[in-house]
Length: 444
Image (tube, rainbow, N blue to C red):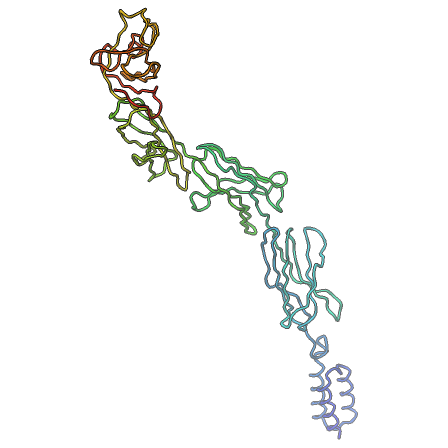
């Protein structure tokens, strides 16, 4: 009967292991008093010992380990004013309860900023909007049994300042000056800001760095730019690795164009050299040489720009003062540019000069003729008509003051006019009637 009682007691201990050490001692005492058989008592003691072992190790049978919050992943770096994320979970414990998110800024105490309940898998997630300061974060859980607080390892979310480009020089001359100014939004005085440049859509290249001054402002001054480029500010930090760039701004650099005509006074049908220089030096560029006629520009030639220089030859067939221009149509590195020059094209005509024997007399136009009187005589042109004359590379503009000549020539120069031109007495001169005005007609 003792064995039967011991067996029932052992089964009870298996069903209710919370009897613990006290149940173990009572079972042993009852087994000794009844002396019903050693085997049954020994089995009962072993069963009770096995059932009471969890109590000896620190708690009732079936107890769970305490829940520990863990941060699985988070945003290491966030731009100023942007959102960051923290993902966590509860390791161990029941799949329920609340988790607190705590934050610490610099040396300030930890402060709870939000509380959330875990989902069915024991996970919890926060999305932090409008972050403006670098801070440390951790998860915290309060144990129900002991009332103690268990926290996760802390993590740090770095809020990177955002460079803002306030202004940049929109256009400048060749080798002029470019100013780029901006500030760090959310930045501090002394933080480094870099300046980068991109030419014709190519990769960004660093030009230099500068420490932010008052109100986290920076100002870069670039001298002698030659090509149009885009500029931007960039904030760079190595630990943690951060690269934040501002918007870019385009600064246009006008090319340098020099246009020359040689000679600038020429006889009709003779050669004129149009030459010049275009900077900066870029391979494959071409110039367009144009003539102004009928209110429009007419293209005459398209020379290439080799080693910054261009050159072409023209033979104008129109007399008068005409306008020529060399035009660069522009590309991604420089905008268009043009340089115009005036060319005087003279009609050749035979001439003589007069004076001795006529000084002191009045001319056909009613003017007294003296050794110092400038002018020219013509058979049909109205008195006072302005006439531009070219001879030996020299030019002079005088008026018609007399009638003549009465020989084979078309023009008769006064002594003063002949001396200013170095005219010897008979030869061909170049003539533009109308004082060299554009489109002036040539007399014969």
